Image 1 (cartoon, one colour):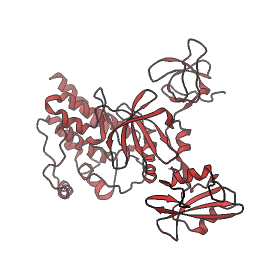
Image 2: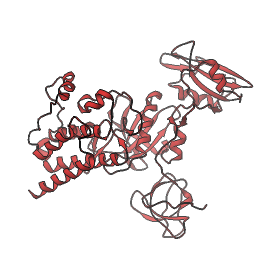
Image 3: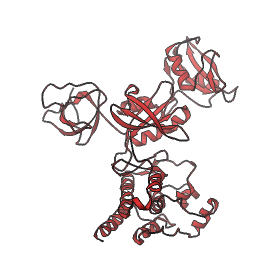
Image 4: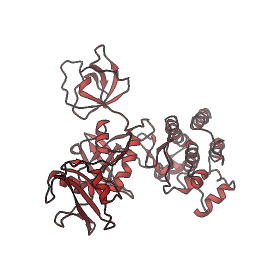
Length: 449
């Protein structure tokens, strides 16, 4: 197979097959291994590459798939066959011309809260009411399912009383099947190769577990409810587009037939920065450590700024610390491309800029405001911002020009950076490139003291 355009140095790819190697110069690998291109050889059908342990060798180009950011033209959906609130007549029009096994799911118009499975069969459309009973879904009150994905999966394998088994989904206009897109771009992992070991945290939407994927310790977000999993698919797709040493790295996603979503990331041994600061305190962490954490975050945010992404939820709780004390920004649940429309998500008042709270105007400059709050958290060793001010008074006071005092022991130069971040006019706030330069200058002076 001829490779049309050679992949540049640094390109990540995923092995599609096992390769044992035929010469001593080859790099053997197994299906699913992640490899990084070092250079193109004279024969464009072969690359020089390295694996995750640093071993190098030549690999056949047609045995690997380039790993790309998930940038689907449509809306990624775990349930692309779900059409929401459409009528019976609209469903029948969508399933025309008739094709046995073509199906969609809609919200029931006659029974609010229930769903309807619509299936084309031998020239006509059958409508099956899906009822809720004790928190589970059923069509015939014999087979019960946790969610719609599980139900649809069951009937794609066996008609089990329906007029036909489900053969082909009728996709909602503008949607793309998430499983197909993650597979196409090389981010779909094999569930059989993941061992989930123990819980390291419980979130509002699911558990965070520590696991083992092919011999590597990983963190795993487990989301079991279909509607919630749908929201997290957007987070995972953002993570496929980002690669920086100070961002928590996505390793891949697993979509289970029964509707669970697993987001697998690198494991960060020392947990969240806010907990790390609180538990270590002044006796363990000196000025050099605090400045390093601040710069780590600034590096990540400059990268997001350069790539036109807005984080929207920057805070010490959303920064994790690795075994070797590198701070990495995580939790991309609210992260958006700067051009995308903003929703009115529940926002953390003490970390969010006044213009974002007031007008839902998010920008890199609103992230800069949050960075100033995060600096205050770092230098106060994890205190909650705006101490002794009731939450409802924070925004009115800030809009009138209130600025927090410097944390005890905070260098004046760092406090000046915080105040720059908290300028009320977002246009006047510095960008992350300038903030990074300033922080690097502070660090250089600190090292000479």
